[in-house]
Image 1 (cartoon, rainbow, N blue to C red):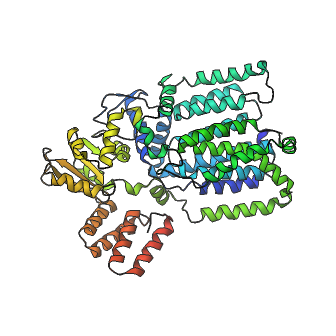
Image 2 (cartoon, one colour):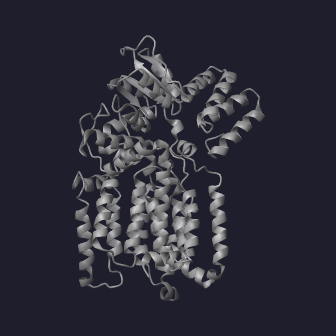
Length: 565
């Protein structure tokens, strides 16, 4: 009987079917996908230039600098996917990778413990802990490839060519391959045969896979970049909220992390009990990986996803033993049905259609879509000081016609000074206006939030800036020295232009007009978050509470977002 056949035995199959629904339900984290846009644009750049070696052509602060695009293969996959099926279909890519990641992990755990319920519970908890960090980014490939590595090597020996292939792919899709090599070392280490001679084979495997990672456009530099980034605690890029330690204020939080972290030590200590060891053995690989990833996750919250998988590896034998003692096998059908009910309960409020899912999962509503329509209609070109998170979107929409001050490519292109200056502007520190005006920026593009209203007023009060356009989320100003057309062409007729008009009506205090205009937007895009909130707000201002609640309920029926209120 083959491994695949054993994995798909009758007792396992129901758990896998339920797992698909459960893992899918963890794929609805709302997060602004700021990196997504430049990854898609980078794939297009590789195709346009027919080379993997790129130089910056999207900024005015690092123009011509070497760009270490170590995730080029992911970028090509993104661009290819979008070219074939459109931007919104990227949610299906995300769900496919997530479900595959935790199904592979569940398969590895079930094969190792012969306890399908325990494998489901542990893999499900791993997915739940990781859920707040699951967005459309290349790091999802590292989670998938980590699970595949576990499947190939957990208490077995894999064919070397499979490992070589895995690492050749990994080094070109995400910088997490460095962790992959550490995990490989732990998984092939002869924990149960501590002889010098037993180390030779594993050492050869690690050496060959490390050499395989040199098969990338940047060679050894692909190792140096993530290592330098990880080890240089003084780098300002390490202060990005997503990379902060988990107990520091700000950034993404995983509510379950504290509880799972707290369980790690007791679970590890349980294997010191002789009766437990006789029944389960000692999962040395899981213990070592858990120890490694605990240290990593306490340094940066982005590593919590890797910790969760490692925790599952360590915990599955113990949870399997507990279920065995409780004779849960006899209740297998009931447990499957309960798990199915829970998965359906989690998934039921969310859409499977790409439109509303993409809108909320990428926070598409935060991007200046109508603004870029106006930029395209008027062929506006030049240097722009824009929000860091919008840089990739500008690259995707203008392909370098609007060159940014800085963007999410961070230390792969820019040195520290532009970022430090950007943070000063972002936080509105004294002298921020001088920083903006000392740059070569022709334009200033900013959202209404993040101090946007105050920045707008300060720039206009200086007498050195002029309004170019305002849409529903942003404003664009130009220096007075920039010559603008006397009468700009309107942006393309679309619901987004109508939403911009509705927002400006709201700014003028005309709630009645704003409500009508927002309602027209919802007729065409009934899940559009900006239009939903603006319509609800306007009806409340007009005293139409019942209508406001009706609009809110309708909007939430498409996606139950916490951003709808």
